[in-house]
Image (tube, helix red, strand yellow):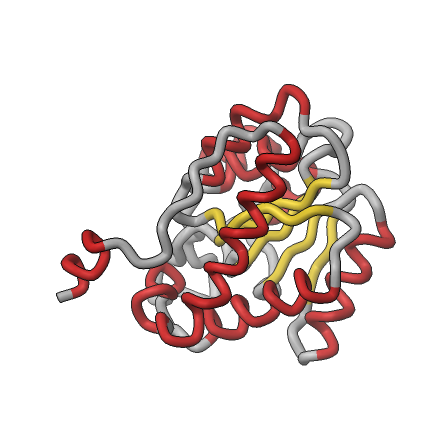
Length: 208
């Protein structure tokens, strides 16, 4: 039993989960996001609270590849959920012995209002390499299409920790759109977030 199991009183192994998890206390929002993934044949599991999502995603088994979470939720907020999950590798449970240990999922935040006391933590999390960005609610069709495109490119890799390097051609333009959107949302809500450059000299040197 890992430390998350002990903290939450979780006993054993979940079934193999879907690649996408959506967390929002507004059912209409999570339903729209889920329906768009499901139209493309991607199963999605929805949670209405951070506590419920954490309880399920930290069981031993196969974790999601992408978590899309609201910022402001009663109880555990989206930033608090991501803070707990971002260092959690998912270890295979019974029936999956020998399967690789999966990296923590990637994350996307959503917010429909002021982030208030969460601004500093959000800024920190948005600089984490596994956080893809933040979107404003209500989500625009272009936002959803960007997320679907990013996830589609991510699915083409076998190692969830190396999406950018293995799918750079398809993924980088979509990530740049997400960066620009994130920068706009952060400026709007006073979130301390420095927009990374899409193609830096140091990045190109490291790939050689």
